[in-house]
Length: 74
Image 1 (cartoon, rainbow, N blue to C red):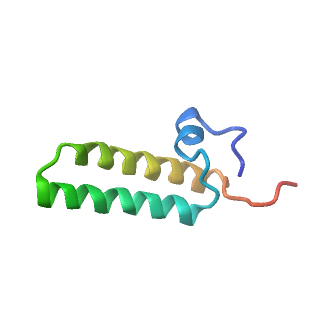
Image 2 (image 1 turned 30 degrees about the vertical axis):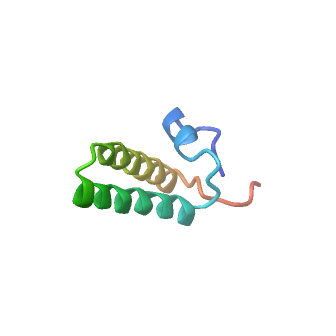
Image 3 (image 1 turned 180 degrees about the horizontal axis):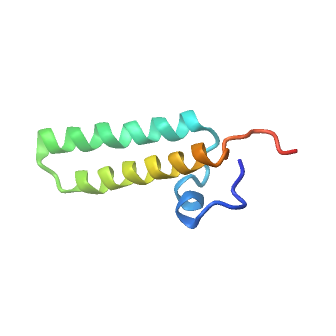
């Protein structure tokens, strides 16, 4: 991935994430867990999960707009 010019929130948010598909999977897992916690338990932890999903979404969006998902470096 092209992390050289990425802001800190992208580097930290996608640390260890290899592909866009994996990042989107983590995003939707966070959303599903947050909705499940809210619906079944009214747990305030759901807010943290929603913030994490927002963070994933912003990082993925930055990578999309800046061609950061290239797998081969030239």
